[in-house]
Amino acid sequence: MAQMTIRINGYAYVVGCDDGQEAHLTAMANEIEARVNSIKALGGQSGESRLLVLAALLMADELHDLKLEAAQLRATRPAQEAKPAAGEAALRRRLAKLADRAEAIAGQLSAE
Image (cartoon, rainbow, N blue to C red; front, side, top):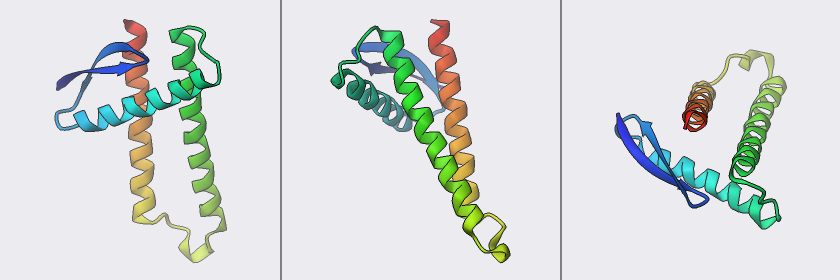
C-alpha cells in the first residue's frame, strides 16, 4: 500500500492507497480542492472542518444526481432492455468503489 501526501486548502494529509492508484488519489484530491475553492470564492470560508464538510456535501449531491439520472434512464428504457448494460454495471461498481473510498478517507481524516 502506498502512502501519499495530498494538499487540500493548504493543509497536508497523509493517506494510503493501493499501489498504482496514486494518480487517481491525486485527481480526487484535486476535485475536493476545486470544490473548496468554489466555496471560498462565494465567501464561505469559516473554518477548515466546515469547508471540508461543504465540499463533501457538494460531492454527495453530485453523486446523488448521477444515481437519480441513472435510475431515470433505466425507467425510460423499454421492457426488453430491462437488464443493465455492461457499461452501466461497471459504472455502478465504480461509483460504489468511489463512495467506499471517500468514506474511508473521511474516516482517516476524522481519526487525525
